[in-house]
Image (cartoon, rainbow, N blue to C red; front, side, top):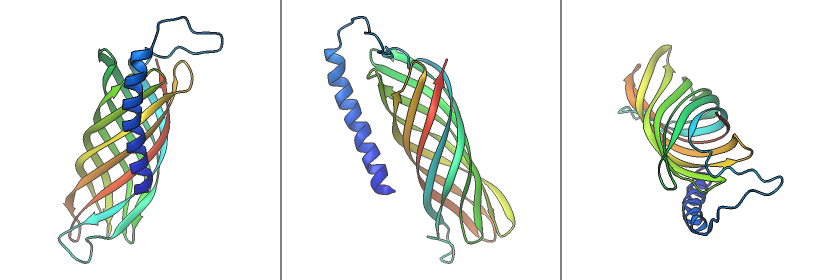
Length: 200
């Protein structure tokens, strides 16, 4: 999955570069029959759904817990808004909530979410972006439940499929702070997601 994450980051970086070159070559002409002009549709609110996979490890002062590998699938919803702040530059905010089966042994995390900022480049049908912000997740270990708070950062690219519909591919690294169970325990995860966003 790390190879996939690196590939996604490389694709995003390539998207920024190629989009920047493409922007210099854009000539304002009417779109032909069957061609959807989406070069200015990245601004505004949106909602979406996504599926993904997470893997990582528990972190703890206890050698019996630290380093235990965790993994699982997730499905979630996202809502946000983007704003054109300069020529070709799009900034925004996004909030997501996912239900998952991430865990190992007697540790499980049934849900996680985030509140993030986004900064991207309007490349017409492509919107490569970076994102970072607050992360939180529920955890249960040995019958004890806690809510973990942490941070998340990553990158992605949205690809316009139609006038207001886009495919969102994203990678994020997330670090969750430790909470007391039978011992202190936190976690970090690598997550890749694919989703569909509908803009208004």
